[in-house]
Amino acid sequence: MLDTAQAASVLAEAFRLEVIAGLQGRPKQLSSRWLYDDAGSLLFERITGLQDYYPTRTETAILRRHADTMASFIGEQAVLIEYGAGACVKTQILLDALRRPTAYVPVDISGDFLAQTAERLRGRYPQLDVQPVVADFTEDFRFTARLPEGRRRTAFFPGSTLGNLDQGQALALLRRMRRHVGEDGRALIGVDLIKDTATLVRAYDDREGVTAEFNLNLLRRINRELHGTLPLEAFRHEARWNPYEMAMEMHLRCTSDVQAEVDGQPVSLQAGETIHTESSRKYDLRRITCLTEGAGWRLANFWTDDQRQFAVVGLEVVKRRNA
Image 1 (spheres, rainbow, N blue to C red):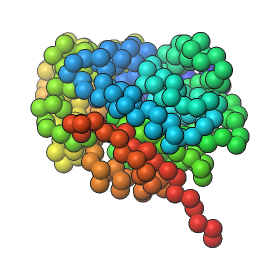
Image 2: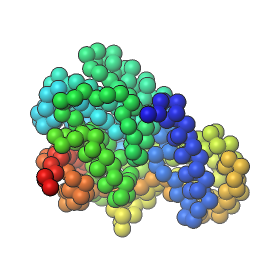
Image 3: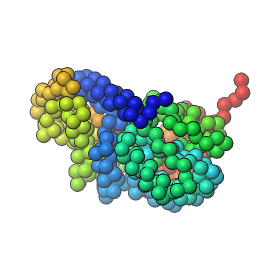
């Protein structure tokens, strides 16, 4: 089993390899998971408080309104496993409603940010066993401590991060969650719903420019960690709606020809070329039902706001039949 330092080393090598391949390929594309270094995580926390960015406040309101019902759905003395934990603000709403939770396992790729969050939660919930795991939840990983036995496990995946994954990745993650929680497991997952394009574009290209800074921070990270020479002034943030994927996309558009290096490898971009950094797919009830059923779950609850902008779905594991 990898310790924290070894896990960080593995992630650093994956970052190096994926960035070089993504910037030397055509079209150029980088995984959205690399947006979340420590600086990126802090910038995203700023985004969640923006007026233009509706998902966080809408999902938070759903959680507050239905926390008791969700807690009943999860059950007493639960083990809560959160994927992509971040600052755990929404998690606290759920933890406050749960009846005698046994353990909380936050999983996140940003180690320092995760450590700070775990320490804060230990102070707030002194009776709760908090076991942070530094890992990329889009890949297979093992828990670094033994989880309590005989307690129902629930996967918690708030936000709209499921939409950042393509169908194959989403199915793999949902199946991984199913393995982690076991045959009696549950899941609570946030999904952004399909809505008018203008609202979506404002959410991903806010008037204050924080999302643009968040996107450009990926280039800063590449320059810092991989000795890159990418000129930030030659790129601008771009948000666009892809009606075929039913997804909002973030790109970094190159405004002039660029010749640069990353970890000693040549990188070239032509004026007008983009680096695709994120897709955020949107769902309706039919699409999320089909997706989750394909991974061995049954949709048991669907909590939404009055405007049906966002939803939290409650899933139960479909038990395997005996051969």
